[in-house]
Length: 157
Image (tube, rainbow, N blue to C red; front, side, top):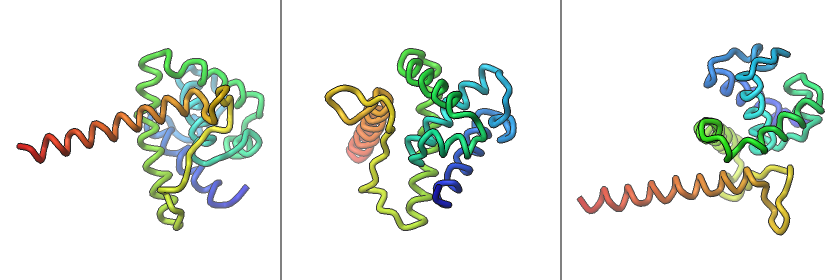
């Protein structure tokens, strides 16, 4: 695994833990607390979507078994979009992780306008997107539209 991917994965891991009220060691522990399980689901998805890690690389970063990561990601994909609190918390964390990733990429000289974030899991038939990717694309398009409307309304007053 490339060093910059490992570094970005560590930064995201620490930030997810902090945002959800845990320490990094707790998040990566073997505890089976439901809140930790959900936090790990979010973390694994972000490591896939933003950092581009496969399950083998994720297992190395979070020191877990690949089968546990697969199970967490499958549970995440089943729950996202179906449970309101679960989804809204995911979108809140996604804004933070997206910002971290774009700033990190900008710092290292990547063209953030051309970069495509995508999950490499469970692609929907007839598309190149997973269900979660479609939800995220819709969410970010809605956020952009809201900002544009605020700008228009603010300039008219």
